[in-house]
Each structure stands twice: as structure tokens, then as C-alpha cells.
Length: 316
Image (cartoon, rainbow, N blue to C red; front, side, top):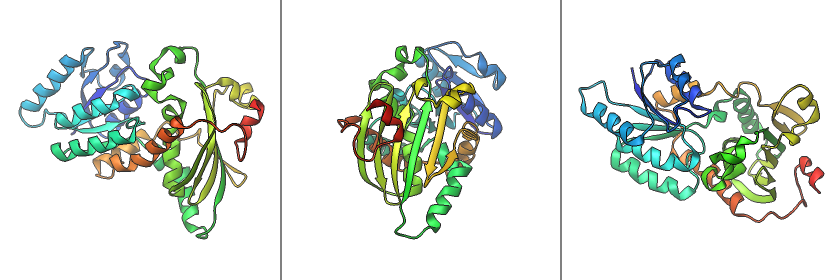
């Protein structure tokens, strides 16, 4: 049985990690979060030690490491705010544990370079949750692209709307310096998926960007992609709003829709299984998506011109 520690236990995505640890037969021995609203732990590992002060958590992990064999933490799962990922990954590696970190792994590509040095120094590994690479629809799409003629390019519209309430502006997620903004916070794993399926980036143009939404055009080796990301409920198509839905995850390929709303939240267990099997997604596999998001954040939007996403028409 592998021992796990969890950083960010009060966060939205933490229960998926707890479930994954339970599903693979692991044991959550310790958890940390400055917020003590973590009763959800009782549904999974009620015997886990919990800390609201990082210093005490650090001391406990070190104590376990020094005890007899079998008590040390093997993996640290990281669900903390994006800007803290780099620091918490370093903590995991220097605690002689591997890190399993939520997306985005880091905010800037140069952070990956530094973490690679620490991996080498400690002999431990960094993994991340690129769960879309394991989504059945993505796997089938990758096979379809691989079987297509070498010179074929797919025309794609990516629409990802994940509505957020008024709390968003107050939380760290609404602070671009802490979250990376909409582009990084909700878009980075889609950029990874597109790179995974369609190859290298050849062109990257930003048409529109503000605190709540962004849109642009990316050309890959095998695809031309118009993308639109938003946390504004007003952008959810009316027919979906009438059904009570606040999200819209659709990839349109040559006019055919692939809906990612199904099987989107239950892939963490698969990620953990791959990590334990030695096939997890490591540092280098994160680089392109982090570079794309960083490039988008640094650009000045060109305006609603050229090959832009249809949802931008309402903003012209």
C-alpha cells in the first residue's frame, strides 16, 4: 500500500484525488489546508492527520519519513492554488516523495526547467493530471488523426464555458497573478489535449481577452483551431441555460461535435493508475501547454478579425 499526503484538502478538486487514492488502494495519511472546511475527508480517510499550518504539516511528513519503513509518504498530491504549485512540488521532492500535481503544473515554462534540476538532485518524479489525454473521445480522435492523410488539416472550434459566480472575483482564481487567468486556469489542459492530438504549434493569435473570457486561433501541424474560453454564464448557449446547465464543453471537428461534458470528472483514478504503473505524465509533457498559455497571456489581442471563433460575433 502506498502512502499519500494531500495539499489543498479544502479545494474543489481535492475530493477527486481522495477518491483516486481510495480507488487504487492507497492510504491518505496526512492532509493540509489553511481552510479547515475539510469534513469531506471523512468520506474517504477519516484517520488521516489534518493540519492548517504548513510548518506542522512539514514536520509531520518529515517525522513519517524518519520512522521505520512503510510509514513514509510515497506521493504528495497537490491541489493548492496555481501559483503555489511550484513551491509545493519542491516540498514533495525534497521530502523524498513523488508529486502528483493538478493542472496547471506551473504558471511559466522556466519553472519546468528548475523542477527538472530538483528531480535530478532528489531522484524523485513530478507527475500531473492531464486527464483529457485519457478521455475516450480524445483517444479515438487521436487514432482518427493518425490514420488521416499526412497533409490533412482538421478545422476545429473549441468552446469551453465553465460558469463561475460572484465568488470568483474574490478568490485567488480571479487574480491573474495567482491563477494565470482564464487562459491558464481553465484552458491549459485543452491546449495540452490539442497538442497531444494535432502536433506542434505553428501559429498562435489572440483575438479577445479580458478577466472572464478569451478567444483566439491556434494552428497546429494537423489542425486549425478557433478557441473560446469563458467563466461568464451569459456565454452558455440559451438552449443549455434553459436545461439548467452552466457549462459547455464542445469540440467541433469539420462540423461534427464531440461533447466533453460526459466522462470529464471521473478520470483522476485513471491518472493515478498510470502513475503507479510508471506511465504518468511528467514535466516535459507539460511544457507545450504551459508555453501556449504563457504566450497567450503575453499577447495584445488583435481584435475580432481574421479567423475568429463564432461566439465572438456578439462582441463585434
